[in-house]
Amino acid sequence: MRWIGLAVSTVGVLLAVMLGSGALSFLDLPALLFVLLVGGGILTTAHGVPAIAAVFRALLGRIEKNSLAAVRHTAETGRRSFVAAGWVGVIIGVVQMLSALDDPSQLGQGMAVALLTAFYGDLLGYLIFLPVERATID
Image 1: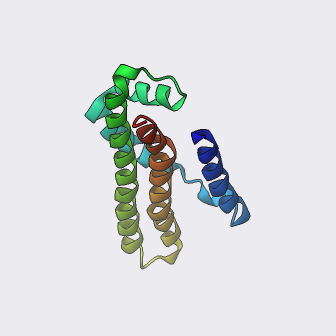
Image 2: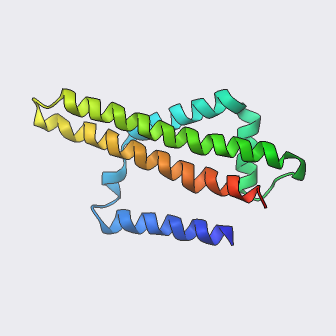
Image 3: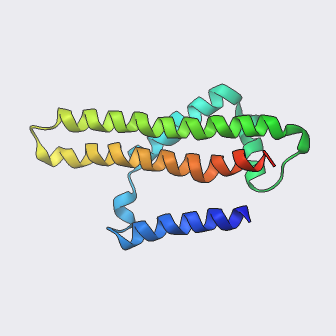
């Protein structure tokens, strides 16, 4: 049943992207790399690579009963880390935007970083880590 919810959520996001301005306007490599590196760095520092691997095994439905609490804790940290990385990216993007107020052609890149980092952080946090976090409670 959880996969159905994840699929519906993902389809909803994809439809909103495709029916709006198109997928290319939602692709910003610097913003995505920022969120992946900062969020992943925080998560790795807090729990290490083996714990992160256990979260992804749990996402695929392969979880050992004796590691439920550890996986839940790692997934919770992952959710918080990626959402936080997205919001730090918002701050960086806004600073970039404000520093380029004298050149309007530069405002778009700062706005893309500002908004897309929050978008990427929330997607990763809530579509990847939250389902694992909640699934390990049952």
